[in-house]
Length: 312
Length: 241
Image (cartoon, rainbow over all chains, first blue to last red):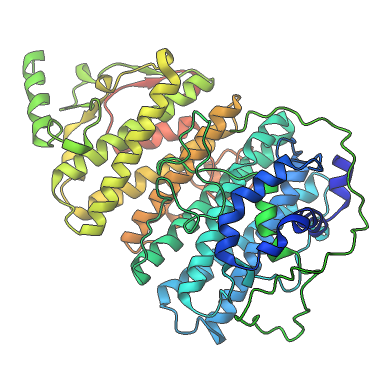
């Protein structure tokens, strides 16, 4: 398992995961709202599938695997803000209020710093940050079903989804890092220091939506938040931690996060966007009918039983 | 000042802050608010260097925040609708954290809410204006974030760690939300940090700067809380040594 993960890049992991979803659910994924509504069903189907991979959410990830995963997320976030900065200078966000532009620049700098520092951290534990790649043109249109850089309202909504998910993603890894003992401590310290900054970003974006757009949202996640407020399962039950209440933030596992990001990261099926222009906002360019060619990386054999995890 | 007078002062100040009539904000109990005297600092709080000590320490910070927001609401100094809405939400969320931590700790909790003693003159000063209220809120929330982060790598129970993570990001949202109300940056600039780079524990802080919420040790948090002069109770124990 470990060798498998450390020798393939995350695009391959995402493709692999996405392929499994594609067989069942891709025809339903054209519509964004429907996509959201289906998330719990997708996750359920994933868990119950007889071909569910060995790396289901109960698997313990090593500190290196967590770092590679976190670096993937940070590279994506940094790229997302880079495109927003560009749109603020010469694109759909030119007319965005200055306070929003300031946040874009500031948060983008933070994410870029996370990429730099996590890259160094990954090298220090024997990994190769250059092997962690994202597509040249991630399909951000899949977030809302339209170009998120076209106007401030759409960018801030997409930003809220991305940042809230980032918070949940880091939270979902703290137990893996704890399980690694002393070897996990430096990465746990780094992850904690990043985790709450992502929460500040999420809160800042939410404040801008509330203040500039009169959106019915506050810096924190509402009690029993709807799928139009957060895109992952924030209202997990069966835990002594009351995740569904506004005083407690929920988490997301790596598999859940990568499944949500798959339409953004999996561009193998997308028409190449050679022009570098923003994707057209007409239809989400998710291609439902063509299965991706089999990855050269074979499906891992379930040679390691899933360890029971305390993660609730 | 004899004990009887202190008791009266305490009761009077509670009424002054409206702590006895909080209505929907009411929590089970509130700390005493007293004129600090060397002989009247209240129960010594002893935190052990283990998960239970850390959760008790977190509870102390949540109690301070919860009492602060109760006082804010009662002060009447925050009148802007949005600001008042935030203060009410923050108060109710901190109270939920108190309730949760007391429930998790059960009989291992080392103090009651009424064991805590707040400095009346400090509280009076803080609650005297909207500006000082909101800026103190930012200070308390930022410190809370650094405190939870700093305790995180010392925790051994995975469920406690996840619970701490579930709380700390809400504290960070509070900090960012109130910072936004004030037009301050949502992330904490290095210049506003209470622990400088040189004084950070290097083992806990591979990363530092604006893009990170640095990990402060419990000892450093006690020092910061002490500098606020808000809590009268003496603090000791291996966790904060």
